[in-house]
Amino acid sequence: MEKKPFLKHWSKLRANQKLSPKPVRYTHEGSTYAEDGVRITGSKAFVDSVLSRLKDLLKFEEEETRLQVVYKKSTDRESGKTLTSYNCYVQVHARGGVPAKKKAEKKKTK
Image (cartoon, rainbow, N blue to C red; front, side):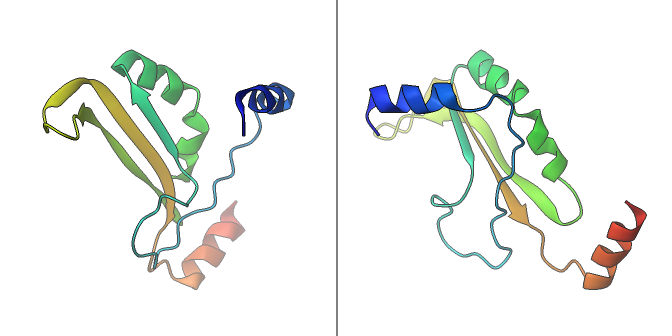
């Protein structure tokens, strides 16, 4: 999408929509690039400020799903040297091996 249509699209979005990521399957193999996820790059202050607006994702660290997270200093691809900037990735993954009986019991107690 070109910048002008993107800004129009973005400005029309309803603010503070419920986050509803599709969990990455437990049996998934290979890259998760095409799966729902968030990548934040930049200064630690910027990354933390964006994370502060995504706290709704914390609820996905639970019995049936887990958060796959990376938060580290960035490295230069060519030299391998550590940079002063950071990168952070967050994805929701389905947990494996959660028996159906436990799932049913959990739903009854909610």
